[in-house]
Length: 163
Image 1: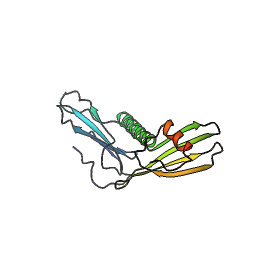
Image 2: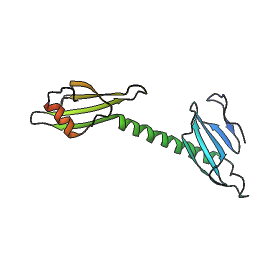
Image 3: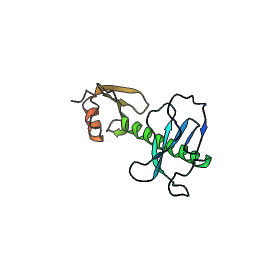
Image 4: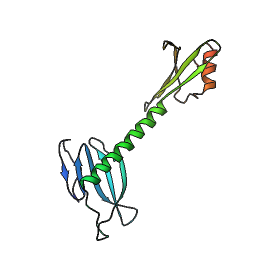
């Protein structure tokens, strides 16, 4: 098996039966620990962990893995990139939430922006009026229950820091 680890530059390319390094990615065919089959790990340059690990096809001899090729590598790059993109979208949606709340007097855009920190995570609750002008901003706990009801209570309470 080829050694895909170790220092290399993004411009290094390697095209072998069990390891391809190209386009900022490394595809490494590995023995599947769960059964007698094979798996492929896709790792983006500069990352220590694979973005994607999936089953790999057996070769014709039903013993060794099918060799990597251009088409398979390109498909793996596309799939691994999509996995990373979805993970980033999920993280963005988890850390930044927004909703619109209407009161008798106005319509407000309320946001909760969470700042993840290993030691002390925190969040900011903010309000903007219909013209996009920020009218209030307070620091809250990162586990603040962000609902239409809590946002309305915050507005009706004069934008005071929630307990």
